[in-house]
Length: 184
Image 1 (cartoon, rainbow, N blue to C red):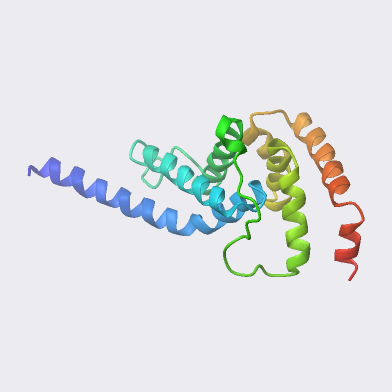
Image 2 (image 1 turned 60 degrees about the horizontal axis):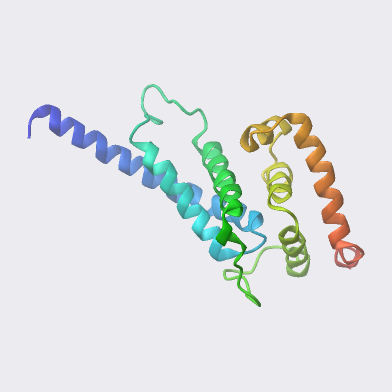
């Protein structure tokens, strides 16, 4: 190989290593958010994380995120944006209505009250995908109205209105059961 070819190969290896480190660090937080977005569908959540990391990897070699001139200020935030957009585009596909019945979520037991967590996941699953995305971004991810609007390609006023309405819908879905679960 020529010296330029060797340098190019070394840069490619470094970028692959950078991406692997990034993916290893962000996979769990992305998966948790994806589980909330999908209403507890762990299989779809895994698919969305895989799709998200695949989309980011496809761009990883075209950008110099960790080089001297990063083009994206916050790669972790960008990954969550890609995840939410992948979720919303998946919900728009015709085949996305398929859902397993009587499926128990896989994985380790969650911290805190499992009954409350399951009730909230069930309530989130009953909301429209966009309502779910707004609630997850605003209250789980603790994003600002402006950040949420940017991710959802909306306006801050629309996010505020949708947040208010989505909270009302989730309260209606939960009804009195939330008081019983929290008040124990």
